[in-house]
Length: 251
Image (tube, rainbow, N blue to C red; front, side, top):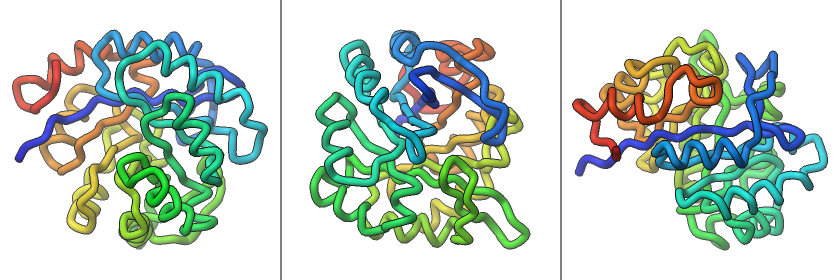
């Protein structure tokens, strides 16, 4: 059965503001996260992702009020991530209105966390985010906002987290991040043969054609982007209108 493809804006949040960089560097301000979430929901986004990008190493108390505010203002599902290393933190975020929680660095540090989250909240609530960089031998997993090379093979790691209970994978190509050169389609083509959970592709979106290629050449169900939406390069209605003739998508 063919499923609807999802357009997912991502809000990277630092010190209470939405920010965006290129290749995980050169961060610049992109606006108020609650206002952007409202805007995107109104434009027809299928879901949202909110990532507290400095939470792994910093105090994350500013994030909960943002999650609560977004939950009160939007009527579409949203995932939150950043600094989630315990059931208690995940529970607080879900109670604040998040539909799903995303773990990355904490899952690499302690893979058992994935199973604990799945057992307590259900696999449908657990998204494992994986930041990857291409190497001569394939793709490697990075953590801590792309600063730490784990040495883990990305495809093997994705297989493991699904076995541990991840209900969805959010894959970010660090090579493509902010470049607008297209998604890492070859990686997703390999990954879809190994796992059966929904996949969200991030990193490299720059045109309607990039989304069309992603959705026609892979089994990925979610296309995530940030800067093209934040800075008005492509509006969500324009993107969906450009896809509707070839892609099963909600208008």
